Image (spheres, rainbow, N blue to C red):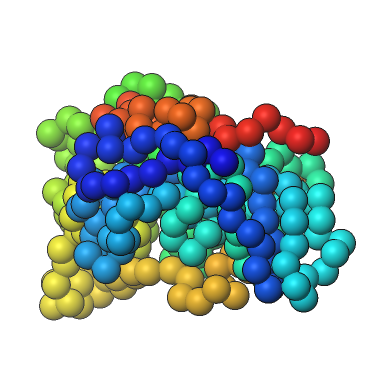
Length: 323
């Protein structure tokens, strides 16, 4: 099978397509004939060797990728035969996703509901469960004002929609006219370009109840300073390279609830993924697939993400659809 191998941490050019032996579905596993593989920002950090937690760095060489979608081509012992031939999305356990075939635990293979395209299901696999988890933790109410950073990204674009559906007033922060236009299309009431030095000053007149911080660093810090006393600051990303640094004392001084993290176990993640897929199938949540790259061009995909040249979700197209 064709797969993308990473032999050394560093620039995107270290991702090289090659031929590898096909995996086999073991007991309790299914083999997915992959049509689409997800790329996350964290995967670009892992490839570069700059993961936020050193424990996330895998032993090399490795096939990267933690999210795939396709048709179940084979099953292992103890797996329901009815799964054969069905469309499913699944995480891979952290690695192995940039490949034509992936063996995963059958319990983690989630069927794609009617009315949802497979590519959209893959786009919702990681980002959807993250956005759903953040919404449940922060619980925006109708009439509250929510600031979403990286609002044109995979998670941010979903948060804009979910917050708008919840009845919140949405302020979208992103970089450049193209991304701001997308945020407006998705339902943002106000947009601000956070590549401008005075972006936070432009929001001083707003009462910000909740911040969804997907950037961290100086931008996250600027957003924290905008949160009203008694508000919520929900930190989930570090596109800047570092999480926003907030001491418990300064959060307590303004009675701001700082929310970090998301689903902590596999069942929670599966339940949140199913919820995101259901919202997508019902037409209430639209993942933005901004760009796709063939499997053989995984390096180019990583380079585009690193250059901040992408919007929404980036997918690898692995095989032609077998529908």
